[in-house]
Structure formats: C-alpha cells, structure tokens
Length: 542
Ligand code: VG1
Ligand code: CO
Image 1 (cartoon, rainbow, N blue to C red):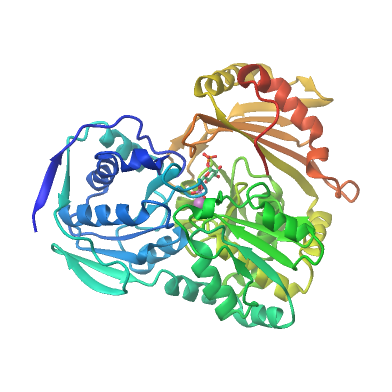
Image 2: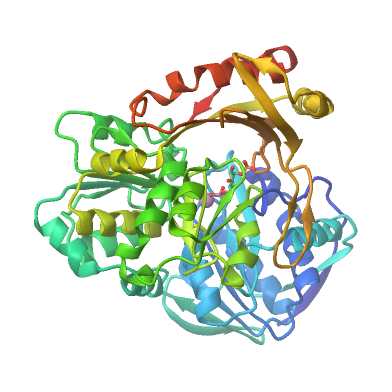
C-alpha cells in the first residue's frame, strides 16, 4: 500500500482548549483540517512503533474520522491501534484501555457535552500513556505544530472493517477491534459491590438512567440492566446517535429537563442519573432533590470507603478551583490532603499518578478516581448506588445528613453563552485591572477579603499555569469566580461561579439561587456584566 505525503498549509485557530480541540463539524470535515491536527499530534508524541487506543462518542463524522486516523497512524509507522467496535469508546473506557494495554496513548473523537451533527460540534483529544488528557505543555506543542505544518502522511487503503471484533492489518499496522464495554464493565466490578447493588434493585429500588442518546447507553444497559438487574427500561435514550437525537448531551438540569421533571414529579423513581456525550460527566438526582456536582463530590469522598474499591480510605481529594469547598471540609474531617487545581481534568493527572489523591471532581458534573485518568460518569453513578445500597437511606437523607455534619456550601454556576469575544475579553481585562484595589471593599453588606487571578503550581512537576480565573473572596466565606470557557465553538462563554457557606444547623434548607442572591448581585456589580456584554440573565444555571 502506498503512503502519500500530502502537502498542506497551517490552518489558523487550532488552539486546543480545556480539553482537546473542538470546532464546528464542517470545519473538521474541511480540506486537510482533521489531517493537519492528527499529524500535529503524531509529530509531537511520535508514532513510529507505537500502540494507540482509538474511539469516540459516536457523533456525526466519528466513523469517517476514525478511518482517516487509522490510515494516518499506519502511514506514520504506528505498530498497533486498539479500536472500539464501531469506532465507539466512552472517554473513561478509552482511558482504561490505554492503561490496561500499557499503550503509548490514545485518540478520542468527541466534543464531549457539545451537541453533535453535521452543523454542530466535533472534537479530537489526545490522552497520554497514563490514560489522562495531554498536559498543557503537550497541547501547546501540538498547537504550535499546527501553525508550521507543511505535510501529512496518509496510507492509500480501503476502510478497515470496524463492525466486527477481531484483528486485521492496515499496511504494516495491526488493528484490534475490541468490545467497547466489556473491559470497562469488568473494572467496575472490581470497585463496587455488585451483589449489594443487585439486592437493592431486587428490593424494588427504581432508577432512571438517561444517556442522552450518547455513548454511555451500551455501557449503562450492560452494567445496570444486565449485570445489576435494574428493571428493563431503566436506561433511556440508550442508543448512541450521530446527532444525539437532537439532544444536547450535557447532563445538567437545563438540558436533562425530562429527567428532572420525572424526578420531581408524581411517582418519581428513587434515583436518577444522566451522562454526557463522551460519558465522563454525570448528574445525579434523588426523588425531589437535585444533587449539585460540588456536593456530589463531597458526599462521594465522605462515603467512598463503603465501596470495596475504596475500603482502605482515600489518599487525598482534589477539586478544580471553581468547584465549591464542600469537598475540602470532608478532606479536613478525614485528615487527608486536599488540592485546588485549575479547570480541566488534565490538572489531576500528576496528583493521581503520584498517589497523592484518590478522588477528584469538578463543579461541571465531573467526578472520578484513580481507577482511570479521566472523569467517569458511570463510575460516579455506581458509587452513589453502592452508597445507597449500603446506607439504606434516600438521596435526600444522605444529602441532608451531610449538610448537618459539614455545613452547606450553597453553590451555583451561571453561564452566559455566545458573547462576542471582544466584549467578554474587555470585561475580564477590566476585572483583572481592578483586583488589587478590591480587598476591603464592602458590597451587599459583605467585605472582600482577597481577590486574584488564580495561578497554579503543580505540586508534582512544578509547572506553572497562570490566569486560570478571577477569584473574589469575602470575609464570610462567600466567593465569586469568573472565567471564560475553553471548550466552546461560538464566541465566548462567561462562566460565573457563586458560593456561600452556611455552617448550620439553621439555614440549610434554602433554594440555592435565593441563598446566593446577594452574591449574585455583587458579582454583576463588580464585573459589570451587563455593561460589557449586554447580558443580565444567564443561558444556563446549574
Ligand atoms: C468545561 C468545564 C470543565 C471541564 C471541561 C471538559 O470547560 O467547565 O470543568 O473539565 O469542560 O469537560 P470550560 O473551559 O468550557 O469551562 V468535557 O466533559 O467537555 O471533556
Ligand atoms: Co465529557
């Protein structure tokens, strides 16, 4: 078979964001675009003689992109690629396969929680040999490479049959098509007490699992319905579709509204859960009660020892900076280390590899542990089930008991989407300019104690990440954080994170938006959101 070296030109605007490279699907499908980025990956990490994992969340162009990536891997001298059947793999399953097979890394085709389809989003991310997202230094090198690339290599060959499990060759490269679910399901069986969860379902416990027509459907059906005996029909929207059935596969109260309505309606099941496009996010809901992701992280950390995979306790807990401090209180109570990292799972990798932390989480519906190097939606859902099975309490009981013990970090994130980039940048620049003068200022009756632009020094390798988000802290423990999203594909998205701590025992039962009202007003005042962007009301509230 012939290897073609195709002359190409750098394509502007390929800077990888919080997690891989995301663009509108037609951009990715444009001439040489996918090829330029994939070649830039191989140029940075090297492909000669290496083994990679490949899979994606099944969105539009997933199947075609997989064939291109395979031909390019072969042309670049890769020895072997392990591909999920149908070119499918959830992000956590891909992370697991990278680690299990001791490969040199993997390419995941996904734009995660962004909608999919011919006019929606596509994405490509590279994970390292540890199974985790490429760190900033590596993604920056890939970006630099896209600006200077002059040629890419691709094999002239027919499509590989990815529909059947088994081994074939492509040029000199071995292609192993594997079941996307089985190894992942086996891993889950080592971490959780499947007998206890099975007994819970046998006892009439009812659950709704909404996979939002994205990748976790086959995983959820196999694990929840087949292995754990949940009633058939527990899993809905369980077939991955190229356009996610028109759904926006972002598991939050806005986009998973059907699930929320069911959980707050008459005859609600005991437990509800949803996951995102590539299966690394989760939302959990009890009957009549929503669990904020920051609280979910804290509850999981406080109760993980009830699951067999964590019965020896946790080494430490890490959360992203905008995530509420609820998990910190648990770490303090357990007497274990706690860490605050920038947004994005890649910042947890070193801490996990070094054995400093066991559980990590982000306010953006991401929780995970050292079993893989990605956040893991079904993992979090199974840990909740394991905890519910052992404690025999409802989600509401567990959450209220947690607040009574640790106090409550009222928390919310307000997203203002598709703002003109220049306006969002001007707002952030103005805010950054006023930080030094803020301490001591009184607003809404609250005194500002500190204000900065979050900078992070990795405790393991000493690398420094600057400008990770503006933090405004108040004397009473309240907090405002503002940053611009790094995963959007249209204009800028402003994320406003709001937090207020109540120690209890009074005042634990308020609506979060009501409890946060003064903090919300202070944020709008300080940042001048309306003046700069024209926006008053957020598009999404979580
Ligand atoms: C968002 C979230 C962040 C998460 C990232 C990737 O990033 O805020 O916490 O790690 O998405 O998640 P940003 O830069 O848009 O705020 V996923 O499930 O899209 O890979
Ligand atoms: Co995701």
